[in-house]
Length: 517
Image (cartoon, rainbow, N blue to C red; front, top):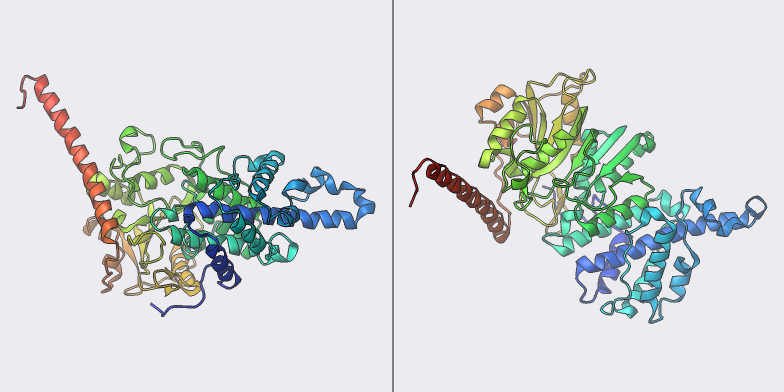
């Protein structure tokens, strides 16, 4: 790994870092999980007010054509801009920032915006008037946000808002610690997934979409390659209500039209897109979830390759995504490394069936310290139904393994990011292997296209290091308490299954006249 860099590969740290440092000083004793919504709500409000203001000025400047339409809501909707009523405009709020009632004014502003823009209904934060929020600090925060142009033409061309929003999401994930990253996947990981899948056109789906990073990066990819973002149809679902609102805001500020369902919902138990067959699926499901309610879904239609264990949702997520793939669709998603080799409660048998069905396309072992909230080693799975498509080489009898554990650059004392060169190297190898005209070669210690027969001899274990011939030994960086919590959760699930099995055996024996004491 390279030594620590002064620049982040994510948001090009500069004014964003200064802005964050200043905003964080104003947090006082407020928990990051709460403060997140205070800050991001103000940034969102400033953005839509700036965008509105720019259109307002152009209408005023061309009075002969618009004939006094500066207060006509339809004139703004025609320009793809949110209508902002007078009491919600930033200049009004800024002029009242030092007043004790600024909290109520902000709540009223959010309510009026939602009323006039139905797509934002139930999305914006509306608790600025609460007593525990220091109104002096709130006024200072408004002054701080006032220093950035967010919605004017020049700022939009530089994606100032996107940079600030993504940087703040990442910093909040880091500040919140365990559990805080449920809404945020590191940008370098998202970029790698997108570069490998190349979602130019079609339906994109994320069943646990968090703050929407997969969608944002997909749109950026299309724009960067000269495509039309209108060729993408976005579908997502998120179970956490506050995170669902963050995603709605994140898409709204970028003008991305996505179907996230009418509300937050649990993907396993209330699938909001039951009939969807997606061309591309990108996801970062929560790792090793034990309380996902799997025992209530034993006969679910999604479990074509085997019932996933009630004590771990990993293979539930995999099969859910396969179920939603179109006939030529491809999925790329993040999972804990345990998914590559676990044989617990039938997971090994499910993995064997997935491999034998020719669904597993590629596995990438990721470096440690990529994620803000866990040190559990992670990997990327690529599952494909297009392995027989005429555009691609027939790869039905092999799997590409890439070991990227040595890659990345430290960007803080605790965290690492994949560089642009890393992303291009990994995705380049994948595309060289995948396409008909690609010139692919195995590279010892980095990549290997292994035949299914070789994977079979290895017991259907998918750990890349086993195939690429690396001597790299990964240090176990998982925090002891976190590791023990995960292991005890898994053990608890196994004990529960054992008790259920014991009860059934007792019942069956009793039914034929043999009662165990």
